[in-house]
Every structure is written in structure tokens, then in C-alpha cells.
Image 1: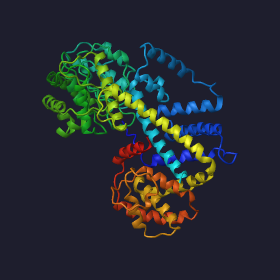
Image 2: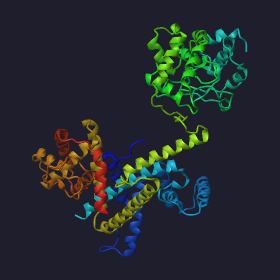
Image 3: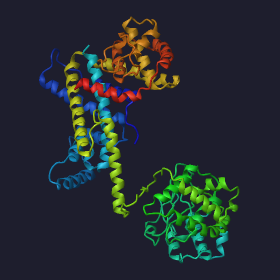
Image 4: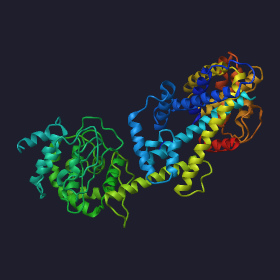
Length: 152
Length: 437
């Protein structure tokens, strides 16, 4: 398996994309402390930006990044109308198969966590999990340093 | 098929593979004591396609080395070849380029006509027109042979190889085919000319090949070594392969997730993995909340500006210097903040760089650790890179010229203080996470 340890260029890529997407966000109109709901709204948008920039930095190489990009695109454009029919049916089949076992075992939980994990077999799921974990860690680092930067 | 055509066909190098094989196969029965292969020839037609490869077991006289791009007819697999030992060396590392003929070297144990492997050897030897096969191919090919999903008797294999040699010789000489085969290189090494191969030689070589079983590279077929006492039917084998894959991935995940060294067993590992992923996602959410709260008072355009200036600068510099980005990036990034702190003068960059490099490993929060004077291990934590990056938000546009100078200096310094950052990555992440959690 190829190593998923992020090196400096990967981190830079993540950081750059995230910063660019952050900068595209519109500035708060009201001065002073923002209201709670404003903060909530911004939180959600920033979170979305974080995930999408992470997925875009990784590209289409990985199943999870593809799934993430698809989800983001659907959410942004069609508000959930557009769906990949094949994947939906496959997902249903897989979920039914899993549900047949009765309780929610750990594999199912992992599937829910990793984007695009519903339709994968265990082998692929583990590999995607590894890559997803590494990318998440990188993204967290990037965001942490931005926050630190701002809090200085 | 017309037997008279065969010699011509064999000499013709432009023949498509299926035709050649058909010709070859038809030729075989004349010289060997095998069962009639006519049914097989029918299967062969159109089976082999140069662009795909797959391992095959062939009956008797096949003795051709399968190179990477052979697409077998599925019907072939079920042919009455259960006893044959298939070499199926397909898909070894080297790319032969398209258009070459494929030799299949297949040898099987048990009741297989002995000549198979020998023939394969011969075919390989004589057919070696162009590309010598890497020796690893040989051994790996042999390895593959033994790794076939059935129990393989090597001794039997060798004897069978011997018998078939004779039949192979003539055919192969006429063949003039090119192609890679496992045995090509080995045989070429051993015998100066292809025609010199004798049965004994081939068998000896084959036995040597057999003894040199090495790691098998995996084309589409997965080879499993069957241990003594283990079931050998395809289902259990496939399951074993699957289980091994899963355990390999679990081990890899164990390295990724911090603090999982002591946990054994899939269930515990899965729990840890799930917890870790959930915690990472929660962290992202938390940090985005923080950013949402923090952002309003700062202008995001600065970030944009910064990223546009700094990162392209990085990108262009790195190839020029040719150092690993790990080294140069932190090096030059460290300089800039320092410079700005000291009002953009280039003072004693060397010392500063050493100072920067002496950063502690991420245990300390990534403040502008540039001011720190340390003798700590030099691996440059990635966190630090980011913090120093973002520190330049206040940078002026006079960066670029300074950057170039600094970069060169940093390069020199970096070289002296370079440490491989990779091994530290895991610990960096771990320690950072511990900080955050």
C-alpha cells in the first residue's frame, strides 16, 4: 500500500486550498460580535469548505474524495435532488445485507463515518479509512495553525 | 488445420498470437505422447489478446510463457487441465511493449505430459527475440508456478519438463517468436545459444528456478502458497487471501492510529479506528466553529494574498534547488517570519535557521518558535511550517527578493541540519493531537 503519510507538499496543498476557499467566503456584514446563528451558519460553511478543499486536494484518486465531492456538489447545486442512482441502489442493497445481521456492528459504523464507505467491501473500506484518516489529520493541522495564527 | 502450413506459420513473425498458438498446438501432438489436443485448439482461437494478461494453465504441450498481456478464454480455465502445472508467469514488471508474441510456459505436475515445462523453457529460450527477462521474472515465474493454487510437486514438474524438451526444440526454433518468458534470461545465461538446450540442462535449470522461488508480483491472479495441511480448494484459498489482505490493512491502520500498538485483534482495532475518525471529525467541526467566531474581525483577503504570494513562490523555488521540499519549505518559511520580526533585515540567517531548526517537536505549541534557541532534535514539525507560513500574513511585498536570498542561505543551512522528517510525522501528528485533545 502506498504510504499516506502527508509530507510538506501535501500539507501545503491542503493549506492553500483551504485558505483560498476561506477567502472566498463573504465577510460578515455586521460589525462587532456576530450573532449565534450567524456563527452557526459560518461554522457550517467553513466545515463544508474544509471538507471540500480536503477532497479537492486529494483529487479523484480516492473513493472517499470522490464521494465527498459528489456530496458537496449535490448539496450545493441541487439541494439533494441529483443523486447517483446506481450508487443509491447499490447502497440500499449493501445496507440491507448489513442490516440482516441484526445489530449495528463496527464495520457499519465505520462505513457511516468514511464518505463513500457504504458500498465498499471491508478490504477497500480499510484502505480508504487509512487515507481518509491521514487527510483528516492533515486538515486538522492546517486549521489548527490558522486558528493559532488568528488568535495571536 | 493444414499441417503443411505450420512451418511457414511458425516462421512468420507477424502472425497473431492465436494463430501461432493454434499452429503450435497442432504441431505438438505429433511429437508427444499426449492426448489429442484438438479440442483445446478450438478454445485457443481468439483467446489470447495481447493487451491483457492472466495466468493460465494449459494442457500438455503448451509450454509457452505467458507475458503480461494475455487474456485467456474463461473456458480454458475449466479445460481438462487440472493436472497441469501452470507457470503462467504473466505480468512481470517489465513492459514488453505491445505486439510481441506471447509464449506461454506452462508446466504442471502430476499427470501432465512431462514436456510441458521443458517446452516452456525451450520456447522461452528460443523465442527470446528481444527483451531479456529480468532474472527476477524467472524466479518469480518459477515462484508463481509453485504458488499455483494447487499443490505442486516440483520433482514431478522437473521430470515432465525434461520430456517435453525435445518436442519444444524444433518448434521453437522455427518459431522465431519474440516474447518474454521466465526462463529466457536464465537459459540465456546458462547456455550460450538457444539451440544448445538439452533436456537435462533445462530440467536442471528448471529445478534451479524452482528453488529460487521469490516474491511473486501480482497480476490479476493472486497466488497463494498453500501450506502443509491446509485446504486447497479455491474457496478456502480465496478466503485466506482475503483474510490476509484484511489483516495487512489492519496492521497498516494500526500504524496510523496513534496509541494502538498494544491493541491486538480486529474488534479492538476497529473500535480505536472508529473513535479516532470520530474525534478527527469533531475536531474539524470545532476548529471550523472557532474559525467562524474568529474570522469576522480579520480580513480573509490577507490569507488569499498570502497564499497567492507564498505558495507559488514555494513551488518555483523548490525545483530549482532540487532539495526535498521538506527541507526547503520549512527552512525558507522559517526565515521569513524571522525577517519580518526583525524588520525585514537579513541578519545572521544561519543562526536563525539553526534556531528554527532546533524546534522542539511539536510538543510546544507552534508559536513563532523562531525565537527559541534550542538544541532539540531537528526534525521540523509540520505544524511549525504552517504557523510560520501563516505568520507571513503581515508580510509586505518585498518578500520575493528577500525570499530568494533567504532561500539560498536556507538551503545551505538546511543541508547541514537536514533530518528526515518522515519518521517524525507520526509522532508529530500524535503529539499535536494530544495537544488538541
